[in-house]
Image 1: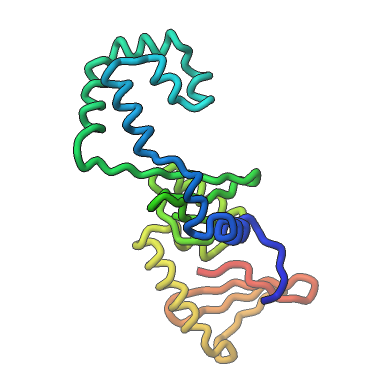
Image 2: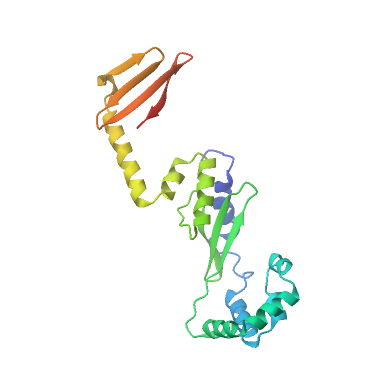
Length: 213
């Protein structure tokens, strides 16, 4: 394999495989069910201090102790219902993590059998769970000029239409020497079988494709 400088996507794949081993870090991964049980217990008791202690640093900065206590007092019935649901037999707990680089690239991980595994990372196929995730993915593929990534983000209907148009264009260009090229100075237009049109422009003696449909 030729040496290469990894992009963020390569860092995700190579770094996670090396660090996680697709099943490593097993001993250091806490059981998310412990957090669920602790939350259910605190919710059932209406323990505002315990509930606030489970918040992230950002959450604690956003909500003071008295604010959490007021919320707990106002929503005791809802908290008891949540506690019953979370404590019911057969509850399934799923844990996810997101790695984020300074340039905006991310990788999604899922905790399975005590180890984090790659769910989606840059060039790997992924499925956005929210509109925000889809927009973030669109920004990343556009920034990388990744056609393959862009196609993966399109709806099946739109992807099928684009691929059909491109397939028709490829077939129409199979014998370019037999096509009629209309040249007007530094501009040219070519009608392609299948109803397509290609516009070209010459700059510094070199012809470039300016537009096609």
